[in-house]
Length: 282
Image: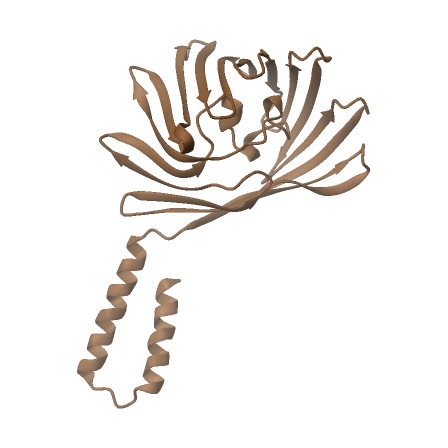
C-alpha cells in the first residue's frame, strides 16, 4: 500500500518536473525509498473491533449493544492502542518494556477483579459483575511475574493506587485452581476482592468476594459455565449485593457461528425478559 502511494507521488512529481536532470531523479528515488523504508519499519497500525446488534423483549426494541473500534500497533519497541468509540469508556495508552518489566501508560482499566479486566467482546453476559461500568483511569501500570505469581501495580491521578496478584495453585492436573487478590485505594472508593477460579474440562466456576470499605457492604458473585461443544455454551451467574435485596440470577446461552457469536441472555428485572444479540468481530 505504501509503495503504491509513493509510486503515485513520484508520477505526480514527474508531470510537473519535465526538465529535471537524471541526478535530480536519482535523489528523488533515494528519498522515496528512504521514506518507504521508514514507514515499513513502523509496522503499520492494525484496525479491529466488534459490533453487537440485538433485540430486547422487555422494551420490544431493536438496538446496538457492545461495540468498539480499535487501532493498535508498535514502533521501535513501543506499542500503542486507541479506542475510537465503544459502549464503554475509550482506551488510549502506550506500552513498553523497561528493566525487564512491562509498563502501560495512559488511559485504561486499572487492575481489579477478573471481570474488570475482561474485554467487552470476551464477556458472555452483557453487564460486568456488580454492574461495573468498565470505567477507565489515567495513570501508569507495571505488570510481571514473580515465582509463578502474576502481578499488576497501578498509580494514577490524586494518589490513586491499585494492585492485583494472582497465583495458579493447581494447573494441568485435570482440575485447575487459581486465586487472586486485588485492592483499589481511590479517592471515592476503597475496596478489596478475593477471587477463585476452578475449571475441569468444559466446566468452569468463578467466585468473587468483594469488600467495600466505603459502603461497608460485602457483595459476592458466583458464575458457572459449561462448553457443550465447540459451538454451544451455557452460563449462569448469581449475585448477592449484600443490600438486603433479593439475589439476582442471570443465565445465558451462546452459539458461535463463523465470525459471529449469538447470545440469548436473561434479564433478571422482574419482567421475565431476554435479549437476543449477535456480535461480529472484525
